Structure formats: C-alpha cells, structure tokens
Length: 239
Image 1 (cartoon, rainbow, N blue to C red):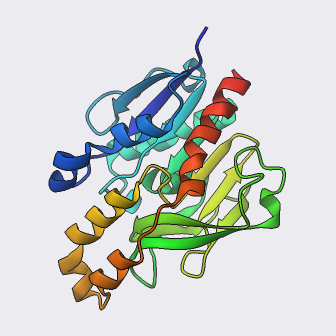
Image 2 (image 1 turned 45 degrees about the vertical axis):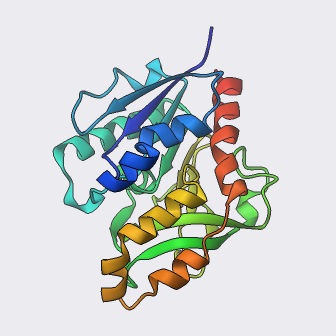
C-alpha cells in the first residue's frame, strides 16, 4: 500500500506570484516524491484531516500569517502537530510550519529583532546533524531561499539544533527522530525567490535593503531543495 502524506496548507502566496507559478501546495507537490499518495488540506478554511496517526507523513507549508497572532485555525493545527510528534509520525514544517511546530512543542515565536531575511543565503549545519535522517550527507554549508519576518526565538525544550546562519540562529531543528522544522524554503525555485523579492521591493526599500542587490544574489539552491525528496524517502521507509 502506498504511503500517505498530507500537506497542511497554511495560506496563499501573493496573487501575482500565484498567477505565474501556482500556490504553495503546488511547489511542495513538485518536490515531494510522486511515489507517495499526496493530499492537501487548507487548514485556514477546512477541518484538520482526521487524526495524525492516519498519515505516514505530514508537511506544513509557509504562510503570510503570523504564528504569534494565534489565529484559531493555527492553534488547532499546532495542537494537531503536537499529537503527530507524540505519535512519531514524520513531520516537516517549513517557514510558518517550522515556527508553528516550535510553538506547538513549547518554543517561542515572534518577530526577528533584526527584521526581515529575504533572498538566497548560506546555511550551516551543526555537528548534531551528523547521523540525522534528513540532513546527514548534506554539505556543511549550503545555499537556501529565505523570506520571513518572524522566527523561532527559543527552541522547544527537547529540540536539537540542526542548522543556523549569521542572521537566523534557528534555521533548522529536530524533535525526536522524525520531526523537523526548517526556516528556509526547500520548495522555492530561484525564479520564485526572485518573484518574491520583486513583490517585496517597496517594503525592502523602506527597510533599507537593496532589492536589486538581493535579486542579483539569488542562485539555485539544490541541496536545500533536496530535503523534500529526502523527507519523502523517510516517509516511505518509516511506513
């Protein structure tokens, strides 16, 4: 029987980006293995998909929402994710999903004190990632696509720090053996990253950042992108 994976969609991308590239769920489905039975639920509009134990793997997308606003749908999803971790179901939370997972497990989420991180940046993995099912064998430093204003300010008490960079100390963490949060976007292509920077140009200028420089620095991030296939393999092996 095919392993079943649910994508918890936690919002929509910006309309001009959606028109050209599709929405969050499409990007994740493009990166996850088509050998999985992949389904999507928009938890901002629809009920949570049964019990976590019903699924062999769970992915949580990014969102324009803020975890610290504690919207009802978000808090319900957080409680559901805590159940998933307790049940040892493989989980991958990305950006908002990373923050929501941390919040669900007792971490602290809020606005980054230095503001926005947006563009392609290097991420360094820590020694604790050696032997990690998702990160083992990744380069010590790899490029990743990033865009966020909120961060995991304090990790959950039981979390293991997996990766950081100069701006963001908590780029990736693991809880237990099969639940991960990553602040960066493995589902972004370089074109999607450039589209975000173009859409953010007025705000970037107000914040003293150079959109032109950030766009010029965008590169492919294949190692970060490989995490979706790596996670797919974990889900299929763990079923």
